[in-house]
Length: 92
Image (cartoon, rainbow, N blue to C red; front, side, top):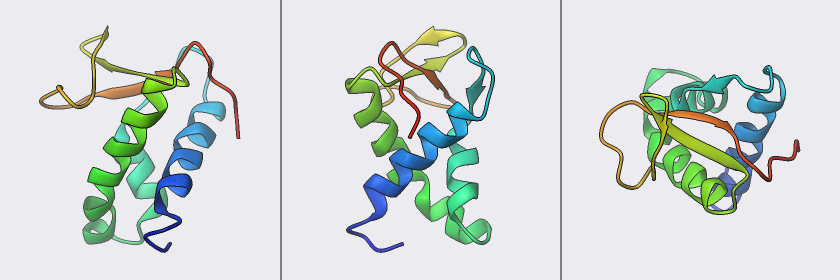
C-alpha cells in the first residue's frame, strides 16, 4: 500500500468489514489495521490512518463512531471506539 493509495484503501477496508457483519454490528478500528498490516508493528503504524479514514467516513455519514454505545467524534474520543454503519452506509 502506497501513501497515495492508503486513505482509499483504508476506507474501503472499513466499509468491507462492516458489510461482512450483521447490520447492527460494529468493528474495532484495530480490526481494520490488522486486515491491512502484516504484523503487529505494521498494523499499529496504520492506526492513525484508520482513525483519519474513520473520521472522513463519519463526516460523510457513511459510518458512525461510538464510545460506550454513544456517538462521538473520533477526533475528540479518548480511548477505545467502535465503528458501525452510518445513515448513508453503502458497501464497497
